[in-house]
Image: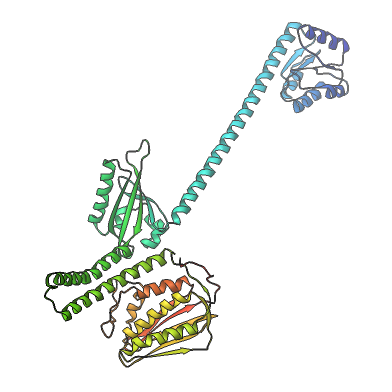
Length: 503
């Protein structure tokens, strides 16, 4: 682009440049220059122009076409004009008349400079685009990683088992989920950075765990399992099942341990109690069977009936215990479907009261049914509720002294029904009440049946699960020496719907 007010100069420059292979645009004043100017390789601009001088054209070109170099020309070169041109951003300064070789060399340098500027801008744009892509990828991967971590954290926090991430060789806890508060009584933050051995009762317990870990690593096994006692925050001992998995990372000398801890205290205790409870009757049955086998030919009928009666009694007791355990398990796992429907429970309670009067008669106990009104409707499975009430009445008869009264009371309660069985037995010690619904409780309840009746110890535990599956509550009020009232509530139907399971 040539900007010069002298036509002869414009023509001479244009002809010379076109002969050298350049395509040339021309303008004779500032206005025309602003109209025809394009993003060309270079501009030749005269400093002295009519109306608007060349420095204004230089300034305009630098503002609107910053990558195009501008070469200033003048017929009156001075240091001042050259300095001012450079200050406004001119690429170079040529005196008139311009020599062809000087012009071509200056243009070549200007075009090379422009190309370098454009290449630099292109590379910067590419670098910026690449940087932005990298940032986006990092952000996406970071977001995905964060979402993955949040998912895994949420997943582990929904687990009922305590999950520990443990660093070797010092067994430091690097992660633990929320279940640790339920199983051990600690908040997760309390255990982070602590040694895993603080959760064991003593050094021997941790040594067993340590040996299992070492053996699995040495044998290149991916997992190991061990049952051992551990310690809660309040110093209570619990039996646990610890399943450990190893994660090996490249470049690390030791694997990471993921240990999942499950509280199996109740299971271990239950197995121990069942074994204990079955041992005696099985021993008696075995003894009587041996006697029968050895003396059956000479034994009189009365002795034979006596032995068979003892065997029948003890086998029935063992069968009842196992049936009770099966019922508890089914209810725990939601395998018992409840046929819940609106039901007037008064006829059901009246029938069960009458049926149990035969049992109560053996101890001269009077059963009284006291309903608040003839119709008390709630949402329930009448068969299962009948089992609960039958168990409570059975217990009331067992634990009542002869010649006393047992009352079955029913009344409205929060739009549902409240049912209570009140006896005049010896009552329950206040500190033992919390254990009566646990079934095979660690804490034995001191109250005993008044006529030596047998009990599996599971009845109230089953009752509790059935009532809670209905959305109701069960409890006991007792005064030592005066008797107990076992009660339960059933809702009006909003808490449970027909066909709901006992989960």
